[in-house]
Length: 315
Image (tube, rainbow, N blue to C red; front, top):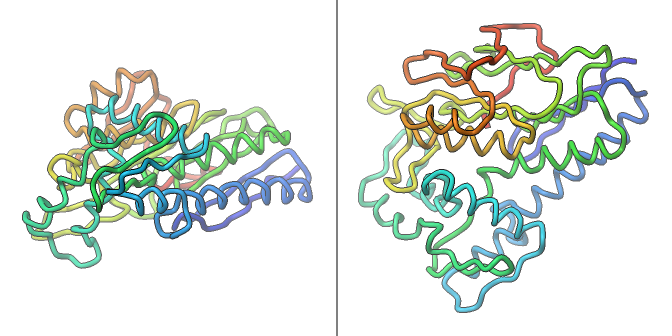
């Protein structure tokens, strides 16, 4: 049976579901259910929708009462707290307020005064969270689940598809990818990783039988001012973009883990190598000078082409 590809857009990203080893009618039905689940998550956690769970939490910032959340949201908030601790505070879902100072389409840097006016609103340690209800103590504070939203949705879609019976294929949400199982002939899928400086090219490819691959990089949203690149990944302590890595790709059993590890590595900068070695995951990174580094034993092919899932774009 042929491989069926279903392309769609969600969370401002090009996405696809690939299913193999089943007939077209079944593949379409399963893909529709998985896409509906991804869209459900987007609606629930989008900061662009006034009726989303995140917007409700943010609208209550500065108020006296805590806002109760459901079990799914509580799990994600708890996960964010774990990432904050694991990253020594560098992964912080309250740091989204810094985007008020950064407009990467303008080509203009914010003033230090603009950044410093926002830094008091950043800090997970300020959040009052008891596992059931949450309070943002200062008006103007906000949460942003964008740092792991696509990865969570990819895992949810993959779990749904596997529950329906899918054993071969992948879920790709803007480059955050979860593999459902090997190709029908038992061979791994070879996944291309986007080159951080040459659009449309791959820097390397990895074979995956199952599990996930996620990439975080400095090339999704950025601007160049006076020859220096400023990307959308912001240090929550200084308010300025990180600059040590061009991209970090991580393979792990779940997309949520792979995405979190790659994002934290980008934020940690020069200290990322030691962090990555301690995670027990396979990884590949491109430093600021374009040099490739990877974990021991990683089966990566430099610049490989002809992949089934082609280029993985940075999240």
